[in-house]
Each structure stands twice: as structure tokens, then as C-alpha cells.
Image (tube, rainbow, N blue to C red; front, side):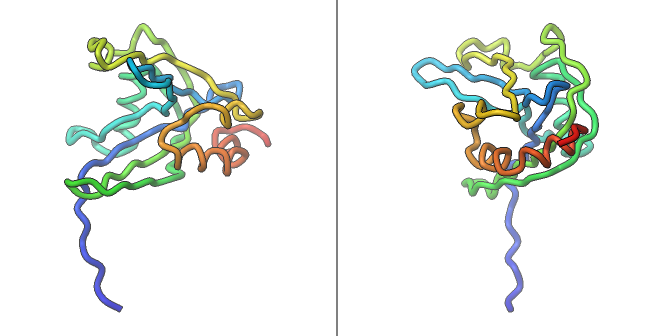
Length: 158
């Protein structure tokens, strides 16, 4: 066997599979001019000032939703090749503890050209997730395949 070649990390991201007290996934519905709406989990890039990937997600939840969560558990990694190296996204399941949209402060909300960022809740106990365009597609596949385990990690009896 040969020695594995080092791979450059071009970008690192942190995203949340955040579940509220009703067993719903907390998502952001994105609307952009000229595109069909799609949904994404809260999160974003890890910055050099973030002590850890989990801390980056905590910051992103505050920026995007004015939210806090508890019980963070990394459950999934996704990667994509880019010109700058591999882009890695860390996905954490967490239980929502507070949310106040008036406290969100992300720069995206001051740039109307970036489109809409609307809070949405999607139940994990029915077929709601199957019918929305959740991006990235690998996240949707993972959540659908592991619904019960994610709810259990978030503290629900399943």
C-alpha cells in the first residue's frame, strides 16, 4: 500500500440538523430571483476566529436565526472537490433551546440581492421532508435514512 497523499482543505463549513421541541427540523427557506425556492440547514463557513467547528455552528445559529441549541453531536461529513482543495461540511444534530429572529445579525440580511432567508419548520415524523428541495442533496438523503436516530440524539423517545 502506498502513502496517502495530503489533501488541501479549501473550505470548512458547519451546518446544523437543529430539531425543535415538536420534532421538527429548523430550516431556512431560500428564495432567489429567477430560481425555484430551496431549503438549507442553518450554518456556514468556519472562520479563523472560531475556536472549533462546533463554535462556528453556534455563531452561525446566532447570526442566521438568533438561536441557541444544546447537545451538539457531529453526525455526518460531506465533501466536494473545489479549485482550492476539498470543501468539507460538518453536520451536527442539536436540540433548539431558543430562537428570536429579531436577534439575528448575519450580513446576508442587509443584502437584498442575496434573496430571502425565511425560517421554516419541517416535521421529521411525516413525509414533509421528502417533498422539499433540501440542499445539499446528501443531507436530505442522510436525514431521511436516519430520522429516528437523529430524533433520539435530540432527546426524543422513538
